[in-house]
Length: 127
Image 1: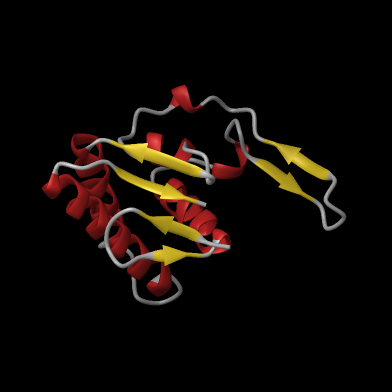
Image 2: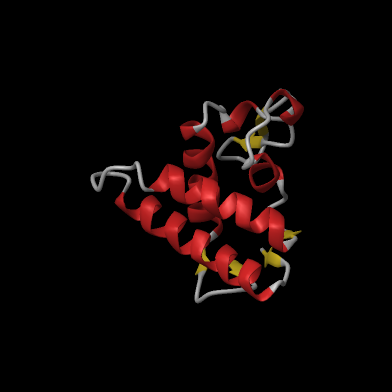
């Protein structure tokens, strides 16, 4: 089971998607695991911790993308274009070392958002 996007030739596993969002959040000063809606589980599937910090504490253009549910989300063309620009800005600053895989995923995600915006369509995913 993976995350399938409405535009571009892009899909990724839930682990990759979650870690990409954590990496983007880290880049803008957000500790993703402390945000409301985030649940971390122990190996036996009991709850280890629950994030409580409200997303409204942050005004970055990526907040709607970061707080959207992994099961699915949809963004209009204008919002997609704004998020695309922000993702590109952050990813282009990453080095090719340990961030190489995240850089590639982020840039492909930004490209998929750009395609949706160019076509005047909603960008979405289903997980």
